[in-house]
Length: 176
Length: 98
Image 1 (tube, rainbow over the protein chains, first blue to last red):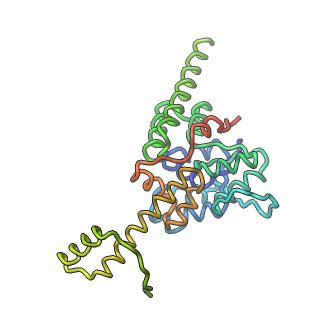
Image 2 (cartoon, rainbow over the protein chains, first blue to last red):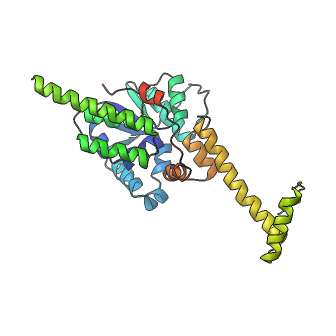
């Protein structure tokens, strides 16, 4: 099972485009306590239904709350506490991928050579792994554009990837 | 506690302000304080979001400085017709899950 460490931005977008629950079934999702405080505090849970969903998934153990512990890694790029903790957790957790939808956090991940993933790519991966339908994938992509404020270029490219995966699957079925 | 400060304002603008203050029977100092507060908030938001778009600030750094919770960040972008600061290169470089 692939290990994914998320920061607040990815956790929020996965919840908002209705992919978080399925992602929790397929991947081992972890988030540091600082991220949990940012997105699923008591106040957030009262205010946002998706925050309540995250809190519920944490209670069930579907999202693991883990902190990176002491590290000597010197991060020259400044980040907010939760983003930094998530990145360091991904760095310390062997074989994990850092999930973020923040450009500056991605820069920091590149600097530390931590593999990263963004929510549209995670969506395409879920489709590739046959965990969501094409219709569901397209619907969630639309939400990533409208609600998540992803740029139209990325949404269009992600849709092309989704269609290529779909056509690939169709062709594979034809060939067998 | 309010502290005095001095700024130079173009005469035309000052005349307009004085006219409005008279017409609406406002307290001139209180009105100028309110205008300054409102303008400052808007300008601060715009400047921080510009830094975010350039990748100089992260979402949570902006939220922290603006006292926004992370759930309202995308709404703030939407209100200004702005997008996330993730670019096409990030999308292309993003890992696949083996």
